[in-house]
Image 1 (cartoon, helix red, strand yellow):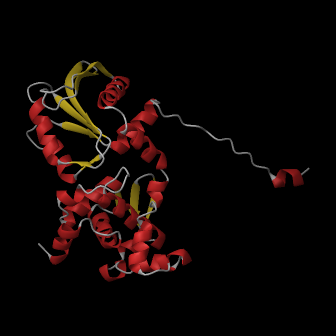
Image 2 (tube, one colour):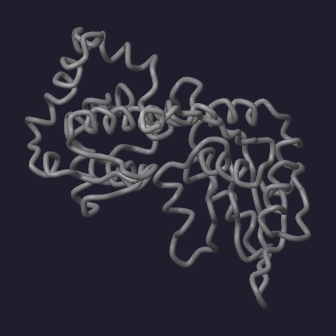
Length: 292
């Protein structure tokens, strides 16, 4: 283990400026474009961040400390002109980023802060200040943070009924909540019909603040073996890289994962407790009046 990796193990997740170069490396490894999750997973693989680091939550938000700081790293890289996101959650490596060196990457945070008078502070103060703010991509979806806070405040049985409703609205039939002591971690069962085929599915739903680890997935799989064809794990938190690998481990029953971000999108799509309002914007055409 390198000295830097030992430092991360000792003090927690790497800072956002320490994630700038790993973000560039990950984008290069992924062919120049990637989603948020693909980027984080590739950084974990390349840098060797432990599952312990991946489990550190960030304040009251919906992400982990590592994901939160990775979002800040992307924000700084975008402002620097090294990457861009032309569509939601998909990042593209630009020529400036392709030509970037590790030494240049180490200076990016300072360069970007120097362009903003409000951030012309020493590195430590700027870091502490940023931890009280939200990266651009997180601030744009503040409604998800509010929704997840509401979901986490629900009683366990109410949250299970909500997950039952989500599955029903998504095409499942005979969905039953079975969560009770001695049920091995299975909160419910249902049947998903696809044309002439049907699959018996077990599901578990947890109101997590942080991340679900690989051990949780192994426990769930152990409970569902012999009781269904597939599994679904729904959480208000997220999943570590190791948990996602465990969910799709070769030779084992597959488990589909729905994290807090995806759960919010599902509730919005299904219009379950989430309403979208369209605001009318009126513009006056100066040229039209001048043409009369």
